Image (cartoon, rainbow, N blue to C red; front, side, top):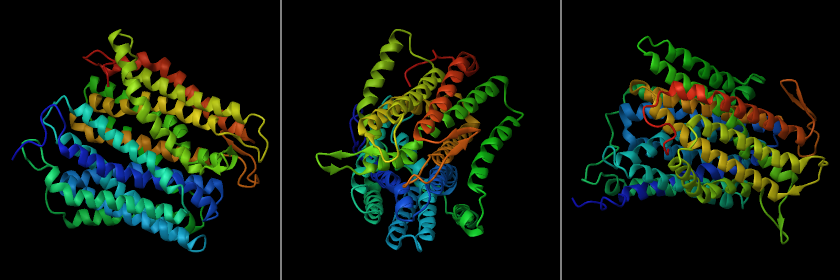
Length: 502
């Protein structure tokens, strides 16, 4: 069989996976852009309740890849996992369409069904499509880094277009568009997989490992039941107990205990794993503040941001497109900056880059706090303040996000690499859940009747105080991490020069 591409280019399979992933991200981010507005406007939920549900949903999305990755490795193989995941996510979006069509009366149960299907589907899809990008190339091929950069652009392209499409129509049609987007990606994948998912010497990749046994089918069914039960728990039992937060935060505490109890760990391995856990802890503060984008900042964009341009009112969800557009524009510049600093032996280490990322998140909130100081109820700020926040946050994301995964793969002992990657995803799950809890503190409501809230004794009576909370939280985390960074660098035991381009 002839080669798919010359060795300097990329296999056609990369662009095929790029296309599939772009539509999946279109589906996910399109739904996320309108989700909190849908809950407050159509299902008539309070801001705090909608924020908690948003946090539970985005938190669980980061947990299920552990299950999906396990089942893929043992039984399904990448291709089958992606098909199952894509199908479940499309079904989930169609449930959201029915939920929006029914409205407040019966829409909530349909929403739980939709969220459950999307969460489980994401678990099958997310870890497997990225793995296949690496499988297209021989081991240690120098093109792999640039392949992931191209693939990352697909993610951001999908994330850029989807809020513009899904946010420009009625909620039900927005969810339907997200479902149709997922189906486009899925059909393309099913039709083209045989032709494109081969290595350059013609070997098929991502095939099933072995037939799914009854135990694994029971595991999938059990997971679906557990997630549906956890999402529905408050409503079912008329309870205020948030079992999802106990579940996610409990796992965060259990994971280090489980790993450090391994007697075979050497002193160096223990120190390196300590670095991963400590940085995972700081990452929670970063994403907790950053992920307000889909929650409190969307409510702020909807209610207190002046969005009229030449007589046309821009939908609030459009602001969700600023981040992916900024990633596409700024990622190449950041690569040049790190390369410039590296050549002069000035490039910061991974912990320092993460501290800079946290500092930039705090700076973004300084910008928005200045804008809302003294803002009266019903008054609005210019959209440029919010756009400024998103651009600063994106630079912070580019300092922190790509480094995390690369660092875990470098520091984790090989026999624990999957478990440590799972821990990193667990930190993201905790961060997203935490983001929902923080978003619930936004004062006021559609009519300003929500009243004051408080966090660890800090009273929040207006938007200025709400944003100050994020400045204190992420600013303090940045400062502590910066102080700790030299101590962490020693415990990383990097044989290579620390701070090599990621």
